[in-house]
Length: 415
Ligand code: UD1
Ligand code: CA
Image (tube, rainbow, N blue to C red):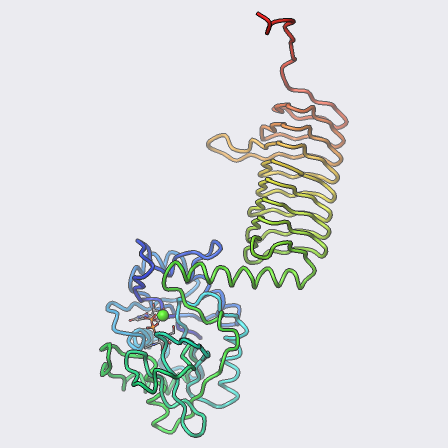
């Protein structure tokens, strides 16, 4: 079980929306936080919502249960609003800040497993920062246990220099957490109920508390403004692109390739610069994609497909060895094997009300600058003359010409 803290205000984003619904690679921060917890095997999640709660609830839907925090009286107060979900339960609960979108699911798993193994009632994820800014500082006792977390605003001169800080991810024993929450006070610099004080309360009772240091600090980054939003997007981009490269995909320019989550790309495929590939796309082996191409949702490319420069494809199923080499829009279409889609070909898939489909058989040659007015079916082994506007189906082995004949008016330009 996990409690996701998502009621805070986040004013630095300078937005009409909650910062938690800002998107990174098309997915809201809070949705990423919840998905990461689910990928770690936690299915029972309670989100504490308050500020702009309708917006957040719309994004998360019934993926989580909700507790409402009417007044923002601190992270400890936020957890208090969710206690009805904890009462009578035994075991551990994770408490996660909702504004940390790129934590690895394995790290959350490690927090849970390690906490159990060590027999701690309270375990926190921590991180070493050279400039720890506003993060809570971790204080250890002589045994190495965590005796307290001191918020930046409450630090004395010595504590301010501590570089191990609280990342805002906790694993607690449910029964001991419930007891400690009842002892929280607002006796601190911000006049808030600090969740972090739970650790001190537990430690003072002689219960075991500890921290797990996370090596990769990028996992722990929270999003507070649009500069951090971009920074985190860049870290996510590096992580995704690196993973594809390790799986045998060549990416010519890691900085200028935008591959969203959950994309499959086969071995020996080459991605040229400035290419965007949206979530859920599947690309086979030995393909070439880009430069400057846009592979949108619902595309499935077989092996040896070439998508060249300045091509946009959407919901396109493309068969082995087919090519869309330049300047095309192919949307809502099925293209067979070994087709050549000439430069500038467009599927006219939208009539202002409905989207319609274009089907092209195997071994067909679509001449340059063809308009395929959907719904339309082009058979196997066809040839479409360049510049055609195809409105009727084309039978197999046919040549289709659908354009005005040229007339030359001799000497016209001399007049
Ligand atoms: C908190 C920690 C700090 C840690 C940092 C890591 C406390 C007291 N401090 O500080 O030690 O280093 O996170 O990012 O917990 N929230 C609510 N209700 C509230 C207040 C906050 O739901 O009343 C939520 C926010 O939406 C956010 C999370 O709790 O998702 C953290 O709140 P935030 O105000 O960002 O805490 P920090 O001051 O950053
Ligand atoms: Ca924060």
